[in-house]
Length: 111
Length: 111
Image (cartoon, rainbow over all chains, first blue to last red):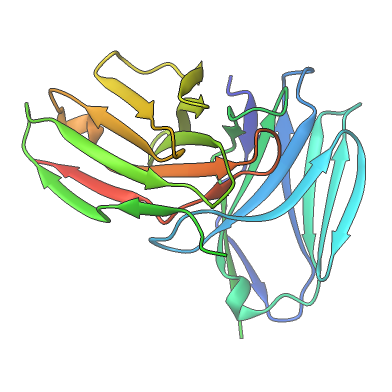
């Protein structure tokens, strides 16, 4: 079993839809959680960085962490075609360089 | 502020050769981590360097090695290349603790 599980999709939604992306994890020691966006043939871009449980909002993006159920979510409001990319969740047990990534979810937002 | 830079961006090598990849972190960042990304395995942690010392290491064979210089620039080396080493190699930099920012990656093809 992978430490971080993520449905690879693909997920296809119409422009303007609310997108929900999810990950589960198995390591109770994970404390820091991240969401990255990766366009084709590019490096991952950090979208959200959260510590422990709770919500964090940044523009159209909201990250949620529920440590009791080991569940990580990213919501995208008013999705745009430019949001079409692969979204990667990641976690780490301490604030060091060893991130554990999910497989990534491919999102397509259709105009 | 300039981002993480990686050179070269593309490499083609043959089996048995060795390769050296370079990473320049964001100015002021002292921690550099390396990851391998493949379609089958996703993003996997290779190693992390901080202040010229390897702080963490992933589950890769000894053919994969790295180092960090006093200016925080880092190199990774893969010796005796195998076909399975074909991948996107990503470098990420961070302050001693905190968010990791990725470079564009080096795409290595082993023939």
